[in-house]
Image (cartoon, chains in turn yellow, blue):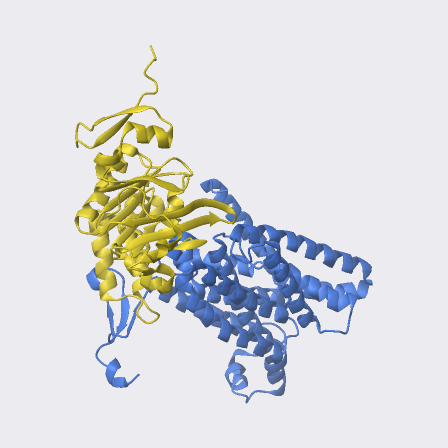
Length: 279
Length: 359
């Protein structure tokens, strides 16, 4: 379906998508600085797509466009086959949840209240706290192991706990599509895997996940669909075991390396050649 | 809504011991914070007590026993005049202006995500002073002083709007340009004062400090209409503002459309602040301090619109009571008092933030 380079030619915006979330011929820019040009992608339903690439390759920018927090200069993001900006913003938020790289925890807010804010797209002026809201928050807290933290202030938590709370907030939104922008940044290695395990579990439960990650080995372990980007383009896309090669890593990151099988999972493992000549 | 829908289904349910929710049938469900309810009641009581003291204390005060007949229009002539011409309008204006300034500050602080965001800091108050100076002293007689202040406030806000290059969407740029506009406005005021004759300058100086002396019922009507219209608008926006606190990107992802929420909030905040400034002069610090105290005592994130409004009403009416009753050789304009108290609070706030390492 979405193997190799997809989306070429200017008529591609007419190409229907087979997936719930897709992008056609995106041109993304901040003011005049173009970051992504003519990019098309289909995010497989029920998959765990992980986007990797060097710094400033446009992967976070792409995620912003997919979550319609950045509007493309041209091209379109399609949700259920229709342009995402043709929906009401709350309707999109019920389908698609996004956790930005550095969300801001308001002063003096408890974990329960923060997670409750994820319910906004389900609420109305008179319906500000329904039973469904309560249930969703309880479930989101339980799914992320945050039940015990519910009455604590977010400012008192450790980095790992805080990240779990943010994921709980996104889960409370009860959207099928979850977009996560570098969810493991600023965490130590144990907490990184804690967050990734949580993502994997959410994926097993049937959600579609799209995440931006830095660590290639973690990406290869968890992704069902790996997207490798360089300079605003998609260089390779597909099953990590099939696409991740030493040539690809050298081409994209400029890092000479060998690829071996991960001794634990059997997925490809990137071992850099740097540093070996040291006595 | 019919009574039938209401009866028997109204409950303060606390599902699983968590947050209490006011539910009416299936069409209304509002979360209730018991702490906010208690606080709100205490603040209302405090405002009422302040009002009572304002009307009864001092040489002109209405004796406590005569107060109820006077309020009902059956009092003595002297008491009636004190109520309807002196202290009544002053009190009513003070309460509403305090509430308006506080809500304006709460909105600015939330949309700029900065505890220092307030009409004082972004140049609105200084712009109003400059307008008052221009139309009071430079070209007297063209416009009444309060209208002049209004014009000044709008000019200052337009400068901020166009100065940032991105309208009101970038909080940090707004604060920076606002500080610049503030400084220019105050320089203009100084220049006008230096040029003016001494007597005129004294009159203007009283206004520029913010004063509730000699208010009338027209002032009261102006500011009350403003708060009755604009505070509900602020309340309607407050849920989207709560999400803006988590960053624009997160707010947008949740469907809160941060840009329009911010722009609307700033319009409402400017409306409230200019209404207050036009009836009471540029009273400083209420807008900065009231929402901060409200947030601290209610221990809740979010703009805390109603708690802020009550806190502002209390602070300003209390400050005005003090200016009337303090045994000083001259009567201070209330703005001087709020500036002194606010300055102390600001110092405390900066030290607290410095200790926490956030500045």
